[in-house]
Image 1 (cartoon, rainbow, N blue to C red):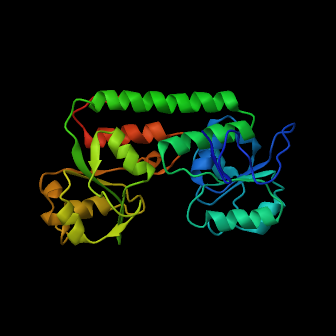
Image 2 (cartoon, rainbow, N blue to C red; image 1 turned 120 degrees about the horizontal axis):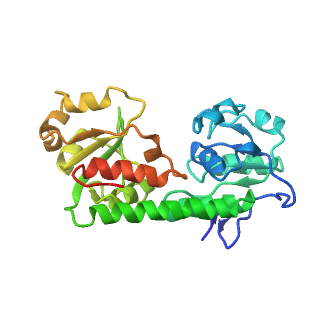
Length: 278
């Protein structure tokens, strides 16, 4: 099981050669891959990161090379990386293609499911010569997932709306890892059709009638208070009237990386506060 830039394969194959006999110099363009490099014990191989990479704390001391879809190519090349890692997402293909043109090896896997995230960790572990650490990290995610499923297994499924933004309203739809996270946590995603991260109107929010609203709009500190208050539309929502609006401040919920199991536990505790989540 391996998702890489060139597709599924038995071994990770970056788009240009990485010398297996030497330790790579790594630039990471996404928070999740930065976390993965450090979690696998290869943080000392990191030479650059995107402006969004803020965990672990030590990563902040690394040189910034712009963002994920707008990286500073001159800054990246100046760091002489042997490997640039990112994720297969919006804009990722264009960034990867340009890096390939400079002769830089890249690893941009898909990370939109638990299986793909685990494959990313396994593939990155192979590229960084940290196979044992990758196996251990994936095993921990499996154990956390199984423990959560056991804790909520006998409880009623709650209809959940997971909100990522309020202006406009951006939510978790089907097909992404947040949708899978809701299912593992004993919930049912009320947004059952459309893209993985759709923008919807308040009228549809009301029609969906969730049992629980999870507000993970990190950039909007007062977002949960707005939902709970007399905001037009939201105040008519049953979940608001019954006090079932929960603020999600754990960044692990939003990151398809080594803390996936931690994010799942956070979601499970919010969906089923009556359960004992290990």
